[in-house]
Amino acid sequence: MSRVSAAVPLARLSVNQMTVRQLSLPELVDGCARLGVPGVGLWREPVRAYGVRAAARLVRDAGLAVTTLCRGGFLTAVDPAGRARALDDNRAAIEEAAALGTDTLILVSGGLPPGGRDLASARERVADALAELVPYAVERGVRLAIEPLHPMYAADRCVISTLAQALSVAGRFPAPGVGVAVDTYHVWWDDTAPAALARAGAAGRVHAFQLADWVTPLPAGALTGRGQLGDGSIELCRWWDRVEAAGYRGPVEVELFNEGLWAREGIGVLEETVARFSTLFAAR
Amino acid sequence: MSRVSAAVPLARLSVNQMTVRQLSLPELVDGCARLGVPGVGLWREPVRAYGVRAAARLVRDAGLAVTTLCRGGFLTAVDPAGRARALDDNRAAIEEAAALGTDTLILVSGGLPPGGRDLASARERVADALAELVPYAVERGVRLAIEPLHPMYAADRCVISTLAQALSVAGRFPAPGVGVAVDTYHVWWDDTAPAALARAGAAGRVHAFQLADWVTPLPAGALTGRGQLGDGSIELCRWWDRVEAAGYRGPVEVELFNEGLWAREGIGVLEETVARFSTLFAAR
Image 1 (spheres, rainbow over the protein chains, first blue to last red):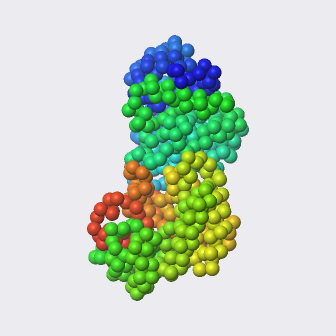
Image 2: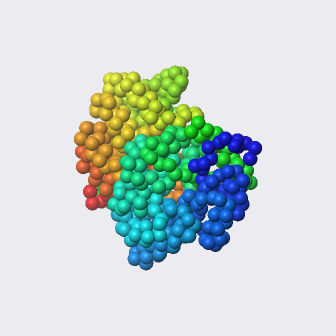
Image 3: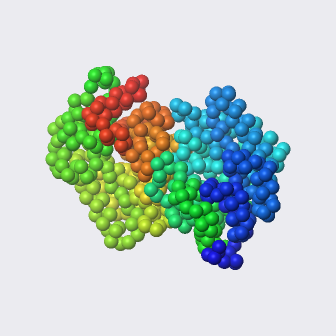
């Protein structure tokens, strides 16, 4: 904790659970509370393993907020049984988000079905599924945040690759129900993203903002190479400025998937993350 | 050769040297000639090792065409010395292209400089460098083809990530001098690429068309995982249709970077590539 001064602007910071997945939920909550981090982003699997109600109580009793729940989505199945299972699972995720007291469920849309090549139809299936899920979410006070994932995940993880695409799907539904999640790791390369972000902001659809840096070389599978803040190629301050200019005033969540960070002692990684956040954004 | 019928439409096919980099230049040329492949795309390093004039004679004597030379570019250096070296190297590449009798030099623009984060400025440096290189190329009968690379290479290899960006830079120069190279591997995920392709075609700026399929998981480094035609997620026929609709009537080059293919016997890979091309595009 010694590296973090009392004057740092942590009021907006949330640490996503995956950043320090080596920590148990109580360790994460305790660490954040001690370091002055006011929010955590949680993942469904560890929360369910701990118990949803117990997790909600643990976070609330520590005075923290759950900023997002990750994640719903995977809505591209073609077969009716697969589609029904996905809808059921997303309804469960919405209920878990409500029980945790967060207003935002992050959606990763899903990739192409096995053997599939038709990205446009897969995106339409995502929109069709949202038509069923949005009323369910709104009734429970949960908004859905469509997260565009980097185009390197278009085939196997998320057919929505740009902020413009995410906004185009979100725009078919009422803004309080569906918006977008902006993650610097996924959008940083895209020169059309700033304009899409401004449109999303004007429409009241920026529902989450996440930070990770871009470092190379990518690891095999390209999933677990997200860089610690400041280690990579992304103009993080500039993206925060853009999100702020779009009217966003919510939490700023640090979500790193990184084998190197996961191999280290978790509280040390948490302290480093808070220190990096404080240093990078000290001028804010 | 038995797998390839005499009726297959190979007239448009070119095999890029990197697809079977385990073959020597004479082996590649001999194999293509025997299989009825009329074109080859060459790379500077093996061509220089063989000798540029000897390579030109070898290909010409076999009745083949050199469809492209890969590659110039890497034009993002900030320091004057690095920039001067890059310009010299690109002038040499233009001369080699002319000596080989190809009209098209592929450009990979280059990544961010060390420690750099400003993509927009790096793209401007590419355009500035082209202003110096274009007259030199046009005088020698060589056109420059800006290849957008997949956004996963934006930091370390190519700051031009989309066809729209490539066209925006190319559009500052006369169409006979500068156009774009369309590679399915790099653009397949992009729902704005078909419109950019149509604009490029209308402007006479589609200078090369290359094929590779998208397969997952990506290997470490993300460079050598390009799939054999038909093995992946890309609607290859549809992309050829789009390129054709944009007015392109030139060679269709297969360029695969794939450790698995490189580990196999080269002529077998060449035969497989010709067979896949023939089967996939039999209806054309």
